[in-house]
Image (cartoon, rainbow, N blue to C red; front, side):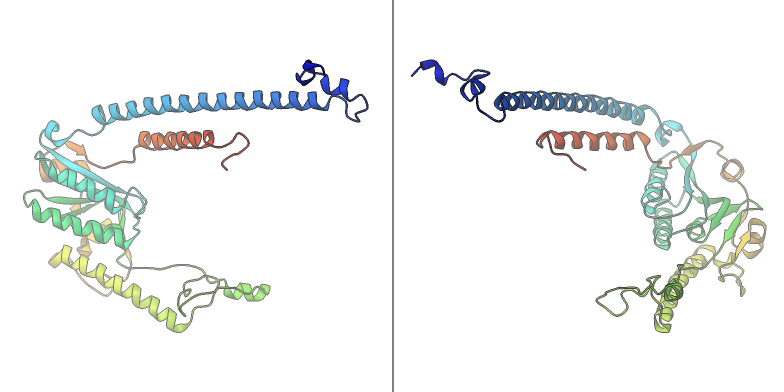
Length: 334
């Protein structure tokens, strides 16, 4: 036996197997594996390059964010001198919006905490929203007023201060409006659709399984029984009474109650003065200048930080890149 017979060499299989039906199969297999290994290696190399570039970019973004917080934004009360603190309540109120109780309450606490704050103006431009968020902000204003009796709170209504937004405004010492502002709407609603009749005409049957006979009573594709409707109205009335109690507490003897006061109507700023829903005309600057006699304004509103959002997205991208590297080359995250 030739000792060189056991040495693997290119072409050995075909020379030994001249009658093979697939000449060169072993060579093709080796070449295919080599090519696949090269492709996989290049793919891994590109991923690592992207990964490290994202890491570098995330570090840059973090540095910019730190510089932004350190040198930008509103002046603090300790460096701004005597001033009027302004907190904006803009847009629909919900737990996920900028007009959430978490954001507004934190802004108000910052404003009251400054030893240089002479008054707080809550600048409102909102059609309303969640009664829960409104109730929380209302309660926090009362709490802060009790802790800082020497700092008045004024609500300044811009285009709209309605429903849940007015629920918040009544906690202020005074409410100022524009003659054309929309004010009030002291009521509660729950809306939706009933598609059950249309589904019947189309021959469609709703398949809804529940544990509890009333679990799906607000489902828009199922009919609502008279008992369920009465229950929903009772819930709304309970929240309405909470709203009314907050208005009466905040406005006191200034409120001129009639049959329409708590009906859900909205008034212009001019009519709101006649109803005792507001105390006078004014905007942020005129109230600071003519009521507080301190024209300097400092914004304490906690705005959503775009840099933080970008940093979070880059962090997620980096995490995704690391996860891909931990998987085999032919796997992917989708």
